[in-house]
Image 1 (cartoon, helix red, strand yellow):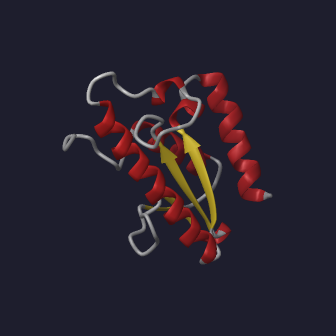
Image 2: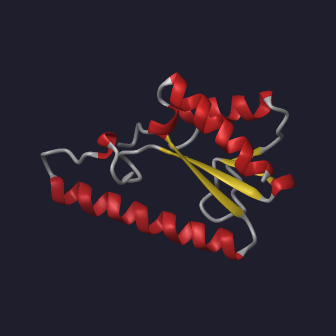
Length: 126
């Protein structure tokens, strides 16, 4: 698990490239904010987290299915991640930030990706 990187993931890079191509400027992994959000858009007072479905326990997603071995460990680990995520979101919202979460499964295939990224633009401008 030490080899699994939490930064510069393919889904995160994909979202950043899209935002940049649409004229949005952002900061990456700002340490001064709770949870070091993946993408921070100060102009829009918005943070974006790009989450892997398995690691963050995306409810109802087939990619978040727990392994059949060592299930108790994985349940505890993912449950802890969900609790930390909820705490980070709450702290950011209390500080006046808008929080957007993009799940890995939402941008996996091209049709879904276009739809979700266009929805992201609407969320930022709306």
